[in-house]
Length: 111
Length: 112
Image (cartoon, rainbow over all chains, first blue to last red; front, side, top):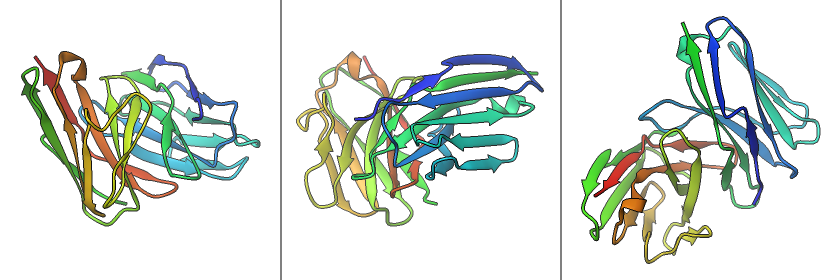
């Protein structure tokens, strides 16, 4: 089982600020997924990164996969109140598709 | 993508009773999983639901407490048996393949 360290656990910022969330492990991932979850809803898949060094952009969100495939980051530019939610990284076990989740980052963007 | 629905969305149950949660996917998926989540916290995998055979349980979860069925590629059930207040949580099912999983909205269970 891969252990994922996600940081920070809590983040409260003002609208317009930038932020970065980190996801790290001592193990190599076959792939890593980022999810966003709002209260009362299930997690929604934002992106999957597979290749070391990969960078994916989703509007104001930028996802990066480390060269060694042991770490990943999510950067949000000019955060908006609608970005508020629980952000979760999850590493896939290549052999059986199971996901191991990080502890999550609870983001609050204040207007 | 796949759309996943769960029933019930929430329930309040008495200690010692059992509740069965249903999970329906709108398309065939390779894998289905069941998770537990405390509000505001991360997800803990309970088990992998295997079509036509016994589920594969994670450490700390057993079949007698959480029996799971998956009769076909689009449907699964999780039963929480002989409930206690410690079982109060959000239960989520997911379905998908190697690089993506889609989640249901969850079932919020409160045990009194």
